[in-house]
Image (cartoon, rainbow, N blue to C red; front, side):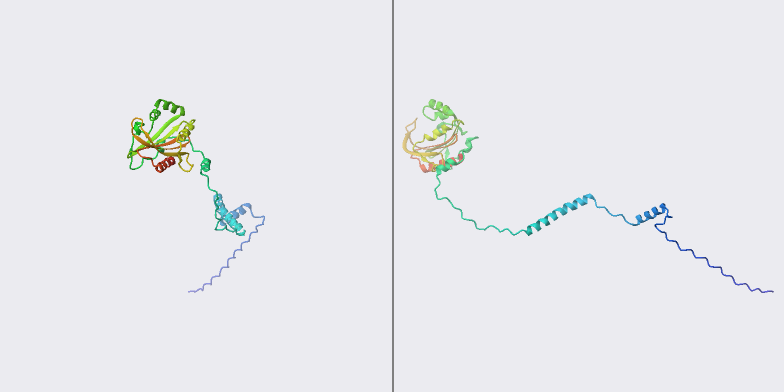
Length: 279
């Protein structure tokens, strides 16, 4: 039996290492356009695109920034100016004329009053407390108006007075009457038409020997006679007090019938109170 010794295996030759890649030159004309586009696309995908700011945001930013810049500029300009001195805290003492005011001249210089219109009854004073209504001897009614016929009847010679009132431009008569004890009071606002304001003047001038109501500032007067009169339909005696004033074509007339002489101061105060309502 023959024993063979095996031969050792022969080692294989090592494989040839691969050649290193050749770098590509960007200027190499051998590079195809397709390859360049592919590389550009890859770079575009790799680098993020820049963000754009919208027009609305730019406008908002400008609107917010503008006032801030303006305020800063104004503050800088104002800070560069010299300080303005403040006025003195104490002013001069006012001086008044030494001459005394002429009341009549001041009254004449006042603006002319506007024409009186509307319901004259709303311009009448209220009946004083502690008094009771009076029917004015039956002339007029509860409405507070006196017609031209009732006005004429309140005088002697009604026919003559009626024609006279028409000629004078009588328009209407608002009245209020009351009594306190045996003393009777009648307050009237008699209005004439716009062309007959002189009739109101004539009514005021009928009161002779009267005293000014307020130093000449009120266009009117009052009187409290010490003479006794007799009622036309009786033998009863009475004392008469009258106060008159005028505003435009409206005449204010207050008549007091009293068994004793009328208090002039009380009549004057009543007339001034009614005058304040009229003006």
